[in-house]
Length: 165
Image (cartoon, rainbow, N blue to C red; front, side, top):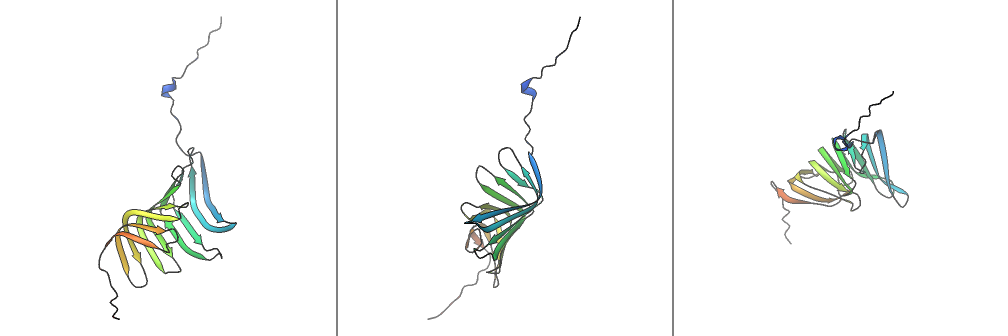
């Protein structure tokens, strides 16, 4: 006589795996417009998840290029995430955006980038260094290339040009 024991697992006790499905090292992603590379995203590590989200736990470096191929801006951060549903990147920790053409640099701790809308924004404290002054405030809305920006709640001392006609 043979007998067998079969253990049945209770489906309620099974947990869905929520970790990364894939891990990539030294990634380089190209974004193009009309077959011209306009943005290059680089990261030492990229984790891809089932829902399409991505995590860049060891930092991110994004280069922005003109149509002629010249670099005009770049963004770096200690870490970043990509929310696939919102199509939104979130850069965190020592976020720096520099515009080489205007010789300006933005520093903040958290910055959102929407590639579809070609804009960056934050509610965090920001500091912008230009050739003439240092601007500070809470919150920012800007073009992704940092060509135009608006500090939502400026703080500090401001210099005003007083031109007489």
